[in-house]
Amino acid sequence: MIVSSALIENAVNEFAKLPGIGKKTALRLVLHLLKQETPQVEQFGEVITRMRRQIKFCKQCHNVSDHDTCNLCASSTRNQKVVCVVESIRDVIAIENTQQFNGTYHVLGGIISPIDGVGPDQLNIHTLVERVQQQGVEEVIMAVSPTIEGDTTIYYLSKKLKDLPVKITTIARGIAFGGELEYADEMTLARSLTNRLPLENYLQNK
Image (cartoon, rainbow, N blue to C red):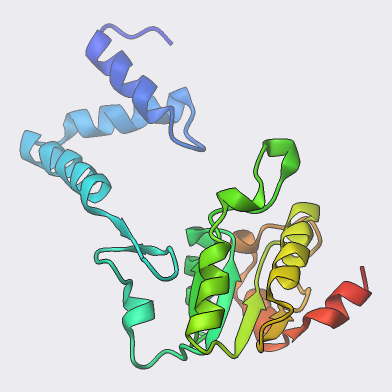
């Protein structure tokens, strides 16, 4: 892409590093910013910089937060005895958008994938076990994408939790195998949560 300004070219290259943004879209965004008043662009940059510098991760569930404990874990209206295990922060947002779940979450930060070099030690698994042990958690819902890697992660977690007095369930598979949880429509995801199954039933069908 040939442009007459190195400054614009550098800005385009930075925008193009974002997921789903190609060079043409990046150029369109940069030219849009160029049309804005300088204070507006400065505010845009300041908001992004402040977000990156000040964002925290909840010490309990690893969700994004403005404080050490996120508003979901700190809420007195949430059922602290039910923990929904998800792969990523995007999955928390997807499930919250269904407005059908009133428990708390635990963000693994990924799934076990040997081919990608991701093992159990690189995920937030030990803190999940500690929560179950120390906080009297009564149910752990495995809401992980139905892929081979997701099933491997569920199986590993079930082994880590099997000796603890906690009910382990998994979301019903209204979501197609190989699908991503965050891309499921809200109705399907809500129904999968509501109709969750005991984990042993799910494993027996594998």
